[in-house]
Image 1: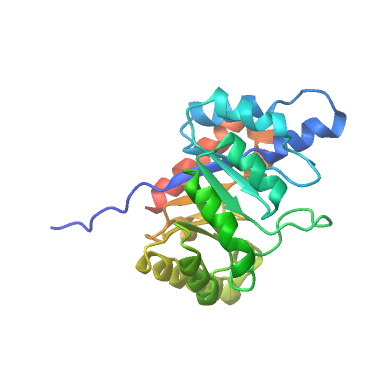
Image 2: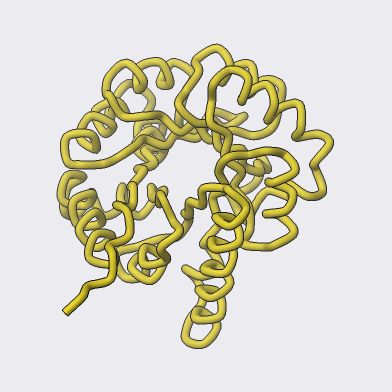
Length: 247
């Protein structure tokens, strides 16, 4: 009896923004997102994701250096495509920079970056990050037009926004899953490493994790929310187990 080859291990990046959100609600230093990063490293997380927003609503500038110094895990810095954020990324040189759309009024990143429509604006930003040795990722919708733009921009990674999948039900969810799977295959065919994230939970992660082209999932809000009830260690471990079972 022959067995199909196993897909490569799917990496789990944990977004720790909302540890900082809780800290900032009262001011002061507790709870410290650096401690969250250390826990993620201790229980098998593969990376730390943090979004430095224009309004500094959660992660602060000083957190970036502290997080990078506190663990061996690579930092994926989510950032808007602005001169301010570019300068910060070039100063700290995280492992990766994920360019995301950012609107001041949104609670979280709603929808993907219009890489196709903003090609000329994004080109020098992607180039400068790449020249600094930072792996550039574009947070986009699972859409062929956006993938083609990522190819033209020479971005080595795309992260597909899975929010529509996460919020859909029944047949609509199946359609979204097929759209994501097709996009992951198209990205990989074009030499781009596909990642995914947004709205992923214990209940919906496995169909996404089972898509063989995905190299990494980035999950944050749900894991921090579950940590209130079961602890951060158990929250990360459970997600890690579900992802491994899907592969």
